[in-house]
Amino acid sequence: MSARRERDDAEPESGLSPDEAVRAMLLLMPRVAARLKRVPLPEPLRSFHLAPRHLSLLGLLLFDGPMQVGQLATRLEVAPTTVSLMVSDLSRQGVLERHADPADRRRTIVTITHEPETRRAIEDWLANGAVAWRSAFEPLTPAERALFVRTMETYERRTSGAPAGGQAAPAAETGSPTAE
Image (cartoon, rainbow, N blue to C red; front, side, top):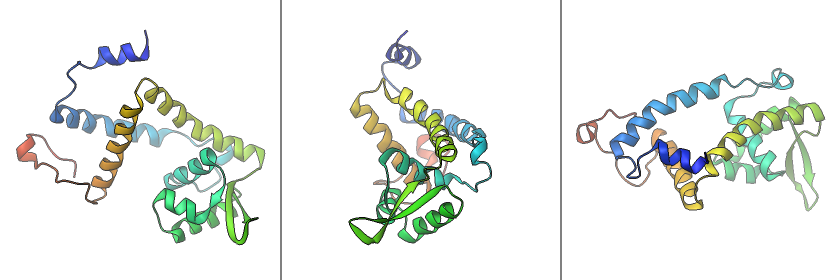
């Protein structure tokens, strides 16, 4: 059975009401978070002090290649000082390498270590999530993928307290509890 057909069987053609979608996500997100917490670090990475915040930084460097600290900060939407501290910490541990930018020696280029065992472990660690996301996204249209990503970005902003272009409906109006 095709992935598209499985999806069609799993959800009615009419879709979900907002309340049904909220209920489904309130049930799903804790399971996803719990599963992510149980993903073990590969053995070669266990001696490093890696935290979830490092996953995004390593993912950018792995998928997009070496870049400057300022570029990483922009892409991660954090202050350059924050990235600089993470890079320094991971460089000391041997996870990242820093090199002068040949085009402007005042700038530093950051890359994942070239040490084969550590680099392979990082690639394997990140690949599990990439494979799962790819299988989830492949049956979707480009517009559906973009909508999903924007939806997750909005959810992330709203759960961090940042405005996301509109007010959440009070629980009394929706008849369902809110997660905020």
